[in-house]
Amino acid sequence: MSKNGAKTASKRELQPARVRGARRADPADRNGGSEQECDLPTQDEVQAQFDESVLHEEISPCLWIPPEWEELPRRGDSASHKRFVDNSSDAGDFVGSNQKEQKEIEAAVKARIKKGNATRIVQESTELPDERYWPSPFADTRHVDEYEFTEKDLRDMQNQLADFPVLEKLKKIVGPDAPGTARLARIFEWAVYRTSVLMSDLNRGLRNETRYNEAREIYLNFLRDIDDHEPETGRKRGHHHDDEGPAEKKHWAEKLDPRNKKLASGYGRSLKWACIDPVIFGGKIVGTRVVVKWNPHLSSSGVPIYP
Image (cartoon, rainbow, N blue to C red; front, side, top):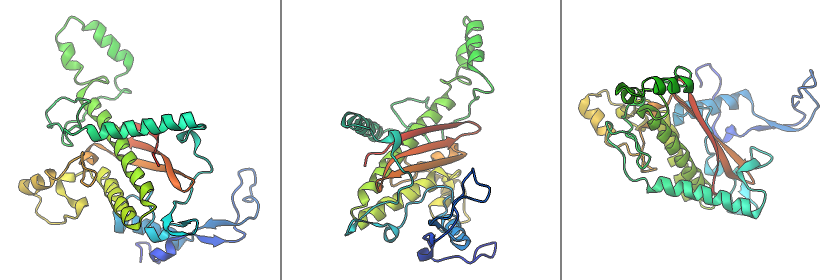
């Protein structure tokens, strides 16, 4: 039973009901458009999907959650080869229109993943940001945003204080090279890289149930990770003990590792929220849009996914 009293449907009931003759809205028609067949969930099913996300998976219901294996439709007549349900009528720019473009996109995706895999060092929290390394999840990401200190303000400051030693100190607080800003840029790059790896794993898992289930669980843990604003408590990783003293927090902090896709990164400390929306076409994920909200600005990117 949900909190508002609506009946919680079982997992089997989570599939949208086929409603014959349901009206699909037409913006040009105040009466709601013409009569046609479409798939619409009941309110019990909608509530169940929210309950399943929030109460069971502890994931925002606004995020895409990969279906369980038994919920995936078959690809052709094969019981062991599944597919995702398309959410777009075309692949857009995520897939090239010719063989040359397709190879270029594939090479770019592989390069992104290769670069991320090659980043094997996580900095200490006090070290200055470096593009060769991942920042510590406990590093200071405070910064002054562009709407508070514009590019013009930055140029004026550099021109007027060019001969003063204080300029170098100020550049560590404001501007794109400020440590907090640079660390956030690296964390966003990590989020795009990790999403690319995990969604590629989901695509490959469509041919094998065990492989898919493992990829799905790792992806769900990734979603919990980027929504975990207090990773040192271990709450989103199954820890619900009342003891949250220094020793306990040290224990959970030491288990954070942005290099390992099976472990939590701890980068949720720096995020206000994140939205990851896959583009599914031809039964597989061909791209994704990643939007990360910092405090108060956001970063976004649309990237192809290697199938």
